[in-house]
Length: 388
Image (cartoon, rainbow, N blue to C red; front, top):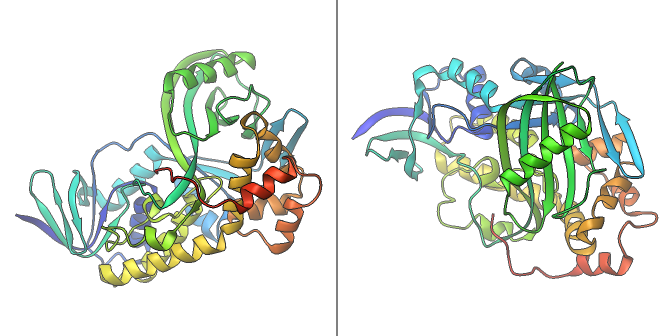
């Protein structure tokens, strides 16, 4: 049976579709909007963004729903440490879900979609929803047409016995023991006596030892004299690091006729795996063309995804050098050298706006990996493909 008709049906309640919902409510309150998500409670996750990742005005628009923001951040490596003045903010899944609940109310339905088509979706219990525009944002799915490495992490938000004294995030502490690829610890001060600490690995495989990485997080806290009194929440994830692939064939896979956003549409930075900046831009695109039917929107999103892929080939080249030319225990040297560059180059890199001059600076000088390995990694054809 049909439960409801709507103008726009958002399948999945992650970052991409949530930002689309908020943008549509802000710019097109006349539309009948409905979201299907399997859980009434959002899965624990924290998304971070630099102010320079976003277009003019976007930081101010998002700031009210951000959980925290800071005026800068720091990085640490065995032979180099540095503080940078780029503004940095984060949004938690809990805070984002609260904003979506306020915007949608009962139009946020806790149900899993088992069949998604261009004109609607069906739930597990047989209830279906019809819509002019359906957007699929259910997260990454396996594809044989992308060759990937992985950025995987486990994080604990912890309460401390005493104040930690940090006034800004540590975005990358690579002074820790290197294992399972390039390893660093990420620290967000979320309160005077509260920290989110994540152990992150840039690895060849996607396997995630949650308990082992949780132990490393607590070890890191003890090593800094932070006495943990409570683990407030946990989060974990595996993000794609794209080495190579065939984006055109990727978009011709079955099911791609439904508009795809977020990780499902390959809207993420190839090196960092960050999807926040792309999600903001895609939300604006969807709102601008919210009167489209699914077929027209799918074409727009596919065109945008392919254009970004072609524009970001430099990052995939760097990823191949990182994963294929650098010995796993020495991968940190690539990032250590990168963080000696001028701040504007670093900002443009994270924003996916690296210029030709930036590329020359990034690749010039004494390479942190053997030249012959770098050349071989850059020129190598695709290997057997990994899965998302």
